[in-house]
Image (cartoon, rainbow, N blue to C red; front, side, top):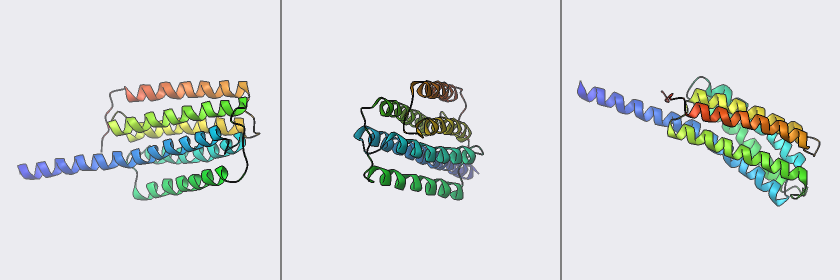
Length: 195
């Protein structure tokens, strides 16, 4: 009887770790792709318009993650769908960085977009860290990914014409500030990840 209980406990712990790793892997990839967009803006390989288009695609990935994580652990099918979407964005990042279109990394508009994308990198990294540490449940991470999708949509809209104005950036920053507070609140609400 005692051996069965130990075996069950080990299986539950292994399952919990696998599910956490599952969601953490996806959010880590979000962070990496945001870093690639930021690097492209900083090097001039991406224009503000291209970065905005990529943020629109990131919005779709975040929305899919939000939908799939809200019910708990990702299924194999959900994970495969997210990976397909991330692979598509990854290919488009590469294509846009190597298509000969350049941006001016020193322009005010590019600097604004760079700052916003850097904030995305930080927010996604905080979500990923929360999943890995157990501070965030999958449901909480899904809710936060929905918030990231809203921020991505605002960035995509702001840069769609190739220029991010001061007013547009101020609106994005307000959304980012709200998202940052939500991440903090969810990471410190004493909920623990459950299988």
